[in-house]
Length: 112
Image (tube, rainbow, N blue to C red; front, side):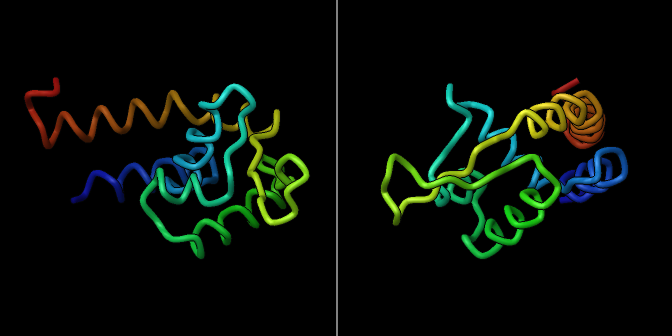
């Protein structure tokens, strides 16, 4: 149970984003167009639309994410990973992976 809080703390300290935001950016980086319908990242990271909305607002103000109307469908909003978001994700990944591996090997000796 202490692995996610420890990884969250490392991300906040080193990258200024929390684990939820990092997870959301990483999910947005997967599709070729680096965009997903607004509801999809919440489903993928297992959280609520309310939390997603707050995180998107923060990330939109900081620059890593922007919203856009999907294919002229005014009722469908997509979240798009910006170039700044890609850069933030690339910069955060090595420290995040290192900390996650370090913490998981402490709690799961078989993963060493």
